[in-house]
Amino acid sequence: MTQLLSKMQTTPILYQQPETLLNTIICDDSLNAMRQMADQSIDLCVTSPPYNLRNSTGNGMKDGRGGKWANARLIEGYQSHDDCLPHDQYVEWQRACLAEMLRLIKDDGAIFYNHKWRVQGGLLQDRQDIVDGFPIRQIIIWKRKGGINFNPGYFLPTYEVIYLIAKPKFRLAPKSNRYGDVWEFTQELDNPHPAPYPLSLIERIISSTNAQTVLDPFVGSGTTAVAAKNLNRNYIGIDISAEYCAMAQHRLNNEEWK
Image (cartoon, rainbow, N blue to C red; front, side, top):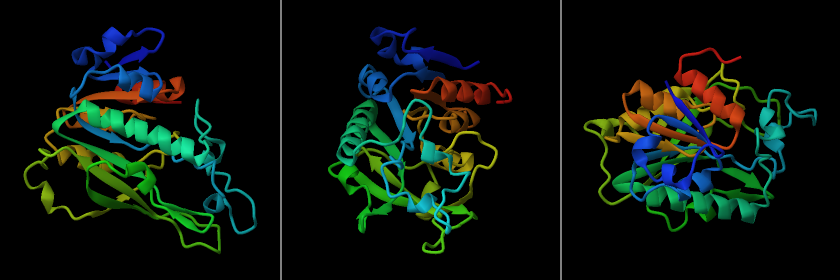
């Protein structure tokens, strides 16, 4: 059964022992938890951080009548995070998170960092200010099948970008290089988390590597952990929201979440 650790129950000494963290969901701030973990104790990081959507014009969440789409729950932010930082603070935070992930992965490890490009004030935010200086090996585009668009001024947005940030010795698992760099998956429809990504997407990422221990510092509803478990890999998930951590634990225990 999955362990659930909270910052009230854990100490820095515990975080520094990798074997105590395997197959565990940690309820804590991601930076705080990662900074207490040992160097090169992780094989792979797979994550999708909050996108700071509330600090935006919000046009992608408005319908053609000027109102907000009722199902776009991200306009309210996340549990324990309002998703509305000043842009420079958001960039600084995400660069700090990537720096910790890079420290944690081994010499043959990699980070799959999922984010979304957007146009803000007429300028493209392609996340270069976040990933600049990190060893990016490739970008992968993944496309959601279907969707609903209420805004007549915009084509339906359907893609997101995964940055493959890799240490020098990282190699794909045998035959995984047959995949192209544009992927298509059906979005999650029955997940109560406001921004889940498809389980099949994360299973492809993990199965394309030789990683035995996978970290997601923004684990949300636990999709990365569930994918790792399905593939007989070890996982470590971190999230600041107690509700999301409980959601992940229920999924990992094959329990219904209500």
